[in-house]
Length: 171
Image 1 (tube, rainbow, N blue to C red):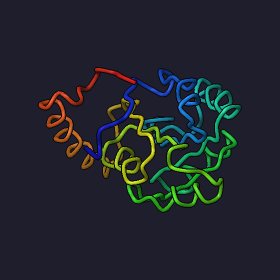
Image 2: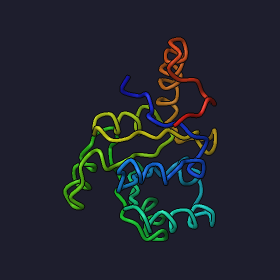
Image 3: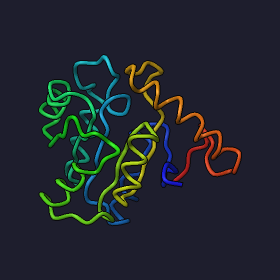
Image 4: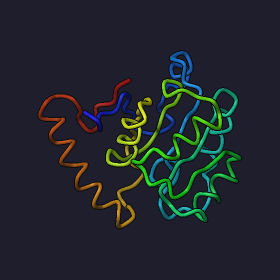
């Protein structure tokens, strides 16, 4: 069950952040590619910037991505949030850094991402709230295609056991 999300929403705009705040979440870790931005995008969409600026008033917002520093830093600097490139998710070394730097406990952190193999496994390993969103686009990085193939198999197994069905959103 390590890939099963705690919350599943269509995108970052459909998440009930007030509910997360009431649950005690203080830090939102966002994946970058196909969660906050398209993989070939070079700038932050205005709607994303608006949401992140609003969220920064209530949460610590951080980007944790497996993408290179040049790409992640562009978005991190534009959004004025801390960012961790080359995170090697699902390893949780960046999560340990974030917890230490901001004196946070696992129960105060949520990961928001579009992949089971990296983002949801990261959340599982770190014992943090896992929020899965549909990818912004079908186009992925080549390495991600392997993950998507494995993800489909996991989703099919979860679907067979009535645990998760793509498109059936829940909180």
